Length: 99
Image: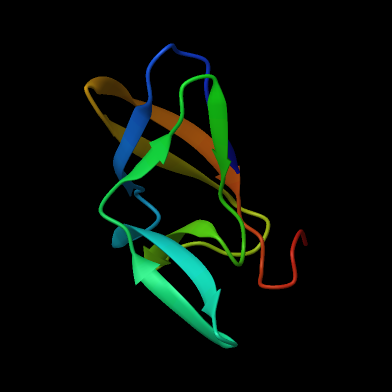
């Protein structure tokens, strides 16, 4: 998923939620000296006139206690600092990508 910001100021993602998850966490994966690390992020900044892509090995949303199956489409509500929340539909893929 790519979140695009067409505005003139940075947008700050502060959280996410979904009825298909007990809790959704903002995370970032990094490779540090050959060791994979996953960090909990309190916020993610989407730069003005820019975008942030959520993908394996980088920023991602982690769904805890999922209630979904491959091929489903789930609703995600993205919460922003100083901006209205946005609800999007996202397809459910497995670890290997699209079903």
